[in-house]
Length: 598
Image (cartoon, rainbow, N blue to C red; front, side, top):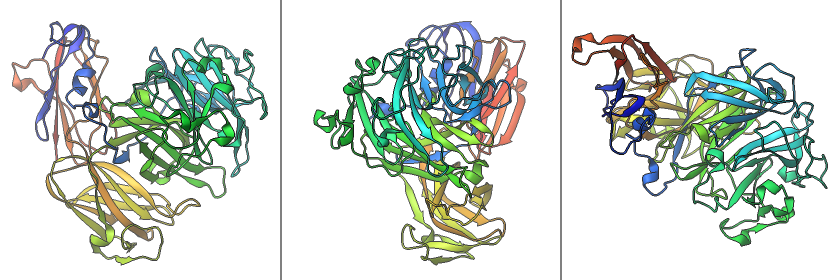
């Protein structure tokens, strides 16, 4: 396969386990029907996996988290602040807001700042941030008493939701929300009263959303610059959601949004949101949208999958003792639902941090829609972090722990909230285990979730067919808001019977296991493969998501006519984190190949 133009060309063969994947890096003048001059090769790669949008949208059935990425700061090593909601602009920039911090550049400590991020978490070294306001664009937001709750660009205008807060640990209050807008990329801000660089009033009578139920307002987010497909009247209306004590919806005609006229906003009253009769201009008549969980969030439309995704969190570092972090993922066919819970995971011990403020970012969604990224606000370090979410629409296979093979434990039912007829308890010393047998029809990358109950941090060894896949860190599931929680992971399973074992690796204390479930994610052994800087002669760099259970080998060659010329760059067994591989050569032509084996 060849391309014409100044971009590097590469050849990619879709192959499977144990076979080399090879791609060509070459500066040349060639052409391929159907591709435009200078087409970036990432598009070619992603085209080998047909996106779900070629068929009618199916529900997202399952999800798993990947390993977090910590965003760098330019001055202090890491960014500083929390919330970190993002807006994808028409010119492909990614704006962020943050609360309570010094931003990327170690500037003034402020309640509210607008920033810009370059790069992608798929290639962590590419990430770099800049403070815009207060920052290089000016200081009109400096000293703002407001807290920001959302950021979105629509038709070239940047919209920023702000509110006032009573900062009482355990009894936080966010209210008196309004929207301000910027026509110059965040330098100058105009409120709904027409005032320039003046924050909206802090009172019920003059704010745009005069209801305590509308204290954490964000936008329902679609594509670049707010571009929306022809779904749910999204080309006619801009939707907003409020998620604090419950989840509510509003809409405003796209043509009316720049006016910031609160009388033009309509609020969801229930039923089919496609009908005008389901909306009212009376905010007091708005009703909650039933959701499995609620927290400040932004609903995001995943166009490739044709579904809406939403995150929520439970966490409070200021409480004593601290409320530990659980992150959740939900999906729905429409903003008004019905919403289904896909994942409910305590990540505190796994990530070593009390993560909060989880917002999905449309910009970094993979072409097939199966991998998304969310921003999270960390506490250690205190700043912007990213976590990938892997999604699938494939059937879910579930096995109750009481039906598994148990060594050293016993089946009981004294802790409420379990699935099935009971759960396995007594997993409290080395060697005790629970083994789940699944007949796998298709070898591939699988998402796995298991549900557990613990009163403190615990560890479990993961085994597949007797081979270790690492040690899993379990959180303290018993929180003020929960008894049971989940742990998710991504791993490779072969065709045939696979025995997945969860085994005690220490004697720290008891673990209760409820069930284990899994679903096929992909048959691609090198998912997430992207080429970085393809226009740099003599230099090749790429990133991909190595899958636990596979061993990878990467080789380099400058002459395909000489098979003996392959040089080993690296080989490793995957632990799941995104990896980057680079090679420099004096030759303008280069070949890289990746081999994946169980």
